[in-house]
Length: 379
Image (tube, rainbow, N blue to C red; front, side, top):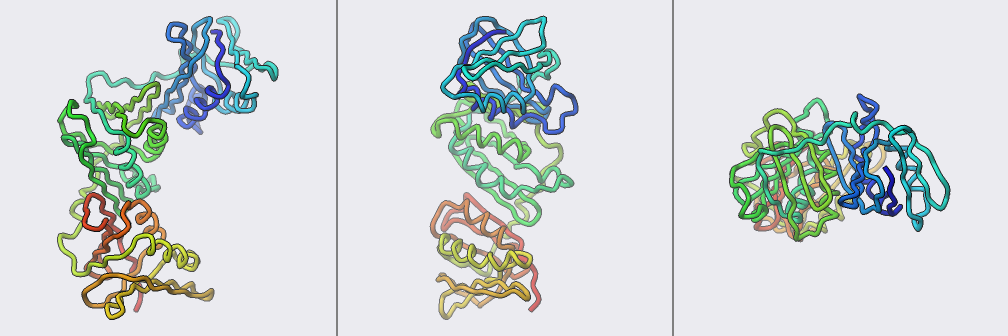
């Protein structure tokens, strides 16, 4: 293999695919990145794959001799990142020498390679379902749900986001058992796609990489989504991201949402976030608990936190509310994370009692629902 390519492009590609390299590889080659040079296409393909998440991208290169090798991700990435970005990089190896020679105007380096034959193939979906998905809408679905997934590996199915494709719509949901985030979007899937309903739960780790992958695509473009037998592949231009699905049945989250509510508050989202952000300085000192209490006479919402033996604080913000006054408490971090993904200025807070689920929605819009379990407090 012999080629010349841009240091800048190679460095960016390495940063991308290295996210799919195993941190604790079960086999030495999984700590490596696969490089495949094709003189016919004039492209150098780079692949990282930890057997669950795979990322592949390519860069333009002047290729004299085609070939494929694997190199240690960390070492190779650090060498390339420190070379001059205005100097082309030459990579050279031959079939009789495991060393790869890396040459730039700074000097020459040698890195020991491993055979490409030992590197596992990225899964290919040949007979599964293919959908064309709108980039901007799918990115919005991930942004609106990923934060609510669980980090507890003991609840593996909850460490992912549940995606349901039906007709031209997408419904995404994530929960960690304490809060639930749901977004439903229409006109996400191209009309010429398969109309079968597909429901999959994908690991949050993989979806965060897919979110980065989508950020490099034009927002009005479409990406290809392939699904078959526990494997999902996303393809856009010269990039491929592949991930396994999570095994198990996702909880029936729809049954958690009450049909009716006794209390409905209308308030400004940004004003609420600002007050919560300040009050959270104290709440973080003691279990992250904030209390909110309505005052229908003054049409304000009192927000308070009490950090035992350290201090306390309270603020009031205007609301629109008709009903009996009530007090309810929440985890401040859960509130802030959910409020920050809502995209409207005015929001509704609905609940029945201080011990039952509360939901936040955009004003007059139920496409996004954020459910939070209250924190029980002593009177």
